Image: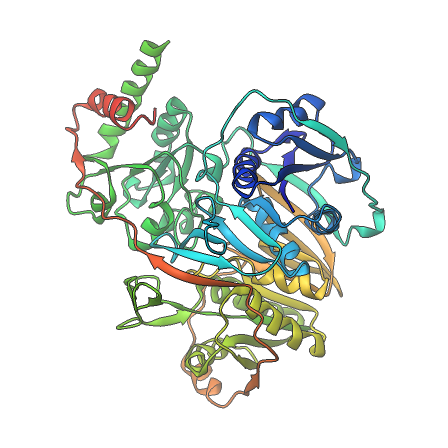
Length: 325
Length: 247
């Protein structure tokens, strides 16, 4: 029996979601009284690998194969599946980030393993194996029992705290037989969104709605985001109108986020938008309409003209940051 | 080209979410059902566009009881050629995926398309699971799909922190998201035609669910919003720092 955690990397850097998955996997292994092993595929510096010990993994299996530097989902799924067999893994942990979504279901089906997509907490292993996840786009939770011998859990981003302790992991080289011919999916090009913080990983998100009247008014949203070190997002009408790129669309049919702080500017708060953000720890709503439904979901509200309030808030944040040094 | 589009039935996006039977069943009272948005808007519409530009047979598949038939007819009204319903109340994504894979094996589809996830159980896994079972490539979260030449597709897909362009030969499975196509409204002719299109019902081979939902829970009610004076933004910053501890 063992817990195997897939820790994804991008250009040699371990992803935040991967650190959450390793923290989750190590706590789960302790709960089950078994070993936790992390798996890293592709070139990553030795310190980053042994550094996974800080997040609770005593052992890291590392396939230092340049063919695996880019995350090719088809190849990755096959490598992880083979490894899970070799290691006799009983639980495999992924992050439920875009990379995990590409691989985990493929691995799950090929191993006949029950899969929970987007776990919010450690499983209850008292009787059976029951994992809490969000359903109905954040409007409810479900407790899901996994009944298969091998179980797969994808940990929802920003839901499980990263635990950091001072330990070095033992890094074990992993031989993976990968051939050029295995690449049924051929990656032609990759675009990383320059300078932006990926939305699912962001601790703070500043989001704008139709009330901002046009794309030319997004400067103040970006200024506030910059002052806070936040990512920017938008509501569906804004993305549909082409004011902002589609990948910024947060909501039921866009992406679901769970930041520590979500600041909604001039967004009325339609139920479909709320579904994408109601996992946020704190919500601030700025809207001139005191009847906007978003205020019912907010922790803090400011009623007034966003065009006056947002620059004022940005200045207040900057002053606070200066005072903090 | 032969395309299979997987469609699921979900509550309307504005449906009130409540549970019965000691929080073990979804309360269907007064709930309107729709075709799962990303299955319809992105997967199905893109399949229809490929049919219109390159010529293709577009088949629909659903795993569900007779209550699925109205939403399958709605999807047929958009222009799909025929549909099959596997008669099984699938307990999880794997149960649905294994039925779809078993059916698709006999039919030699070039392309199997799903939406990125259903808005009820948010599983996001049926496409990947079909790929895992059929040992075919899986392209997840695609926002673009073009046929570069016969049997070779170019896709754009979301990756963590960016986007990627990739190529893959048919047959493969793709999950579709925003950007892939635009929602269409069925016209009267489509609705009339859908009434007589073939909707085949096939009994399930076996029920192979690996997970079950033990119970549901609603989130706790939110406390009342704390209003801050629009002239006091330093006060808001103080609250976010001292009270919420988020900055």
